Amino acid sequence: MMKNQPLYHSVRSALLSLFLVAMSTLTSFSQNGLLAEYYDGQNFDRFVSSMYVDKIDDDWWGEPPVPGVDPQVCSIRWTGKLKPGKSAQYLFSARVDDGIRVWIDGELIINQWHLNDVGVFAGATTLVANQEYDLKVEYFNALNEGEVRLLWAMEKSKDEQSWYERLFGVTYNYEVISSNFFIRPEKPLPTMKEVLPPKKNKTSEASPTTERKTLIPQPVESKVDIIAQEPMTVERAEKYIPKNIEFVRAKAEILEVSNRELDIFAQFMLDHPDVTVLIEGHTDVVGNEEANLKLSKQRANKVARYLVKKGVSGLRIKTEGYGSSRPIKMPEEGGYYPPNRRVVFVLSGLGE
Image: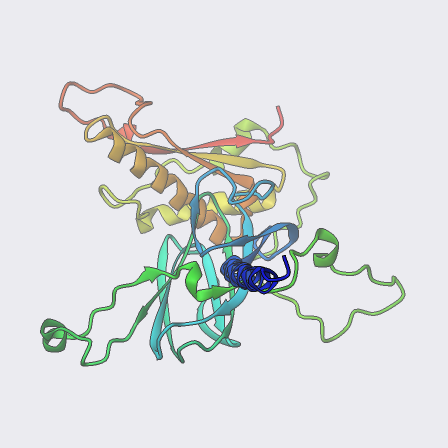
């Protein structure tokens, strides 16, 4: 028994070493990714939850990115470290609907903090291989569908370029940054109590150094004396509802001729903060049904965004697209009936 003891210890030591290596590898793997914090409101107004994610690559329509978050009006903050595999100048790109900011080691390389219809924005910085850089990404969605993707591409050296690229210029192949290059913070997931600001003493003054973040300068909704007004009825509201919203043919681009009616309606919404609106998009019955449905949704969203830019809260606006499913009139086969192409405003919160 004593003769086998050294062998027993050597086997045990080998197994223990393998176990420690395996655990170290597992721990290292589990640390890849970023910490994501989810808030209601466009400007991180109310903390909802947090979780670790592999990458920044998400989109949604109606369904929230995480349970409990308002999918239409929300904000997200990702933090962690970025560790590139090669030394090079990196071109970062963000595909978003609506706004995004990206910091690397405190340097703001992408700053598009305003409404966008699936905009693509870029910024560049030089990174050193295997060096860890602090990364912070902030995003907000102000209306309806949301989309956010963080991508990058390396600038190629002349040796890495093909003859075609050297002749006609370098092309960059952007790809979503994978979890392999992210290192999540070591701190545990924050709780609601940790995220909420501490209660202030009523007698104390606010600290002058307190940072106040502002999303988009928007007009303050009109301070109308609602009590002194007559109740806003359907009949009275009818004159404020746009009747002729025109678009570029087959596109979701509002023609300038429609701006006056939309401006009048936006002011009406600002003057009556209890009123909400459902904006419906409709197309004619000709053409591809799927394309018509998509176009009707895009047009309804475009009108909604116009109102948000005028200061109307996105929480008071809903949109829906019906394509060619609800025509006013069925034209003769192969024919057109232009009134079928319309945007309808359905108001709620009015008096009798």
